[in-house]
Length: 115
Image (cartoon, rainbow, N blue to C red; front, side):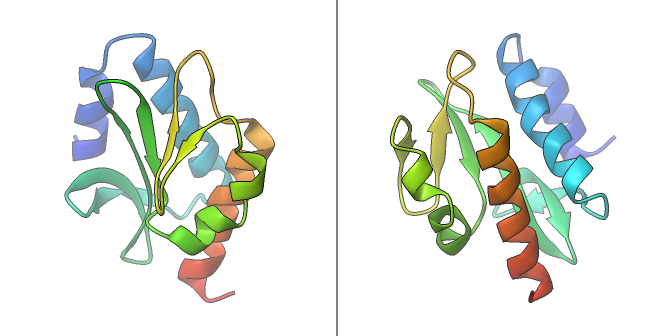
């Protein structure tokens, strides 16, 4: 069992469903990504580089694309969310819209693959 799988199993609802949703979309968009670790966090990894991590914090769920540049590709569409240089914060009640999430994941994939 991977560190990511163990982490997901440890989460209570509704956090688990919210976090699993992000990972499921990322896996569908980037099927070559595998479970791994990025900067000490359970993550999806592509080509040996972290693609993204999603972790539950005390007051939010953090999505870490490991790239401020990838986050910048959708930053203007996230006015209703708390953002920092490389973190997108959301909640189970206020998830990231699918189309925005998809573009963020694909931007990070393209960055890793040098597209």
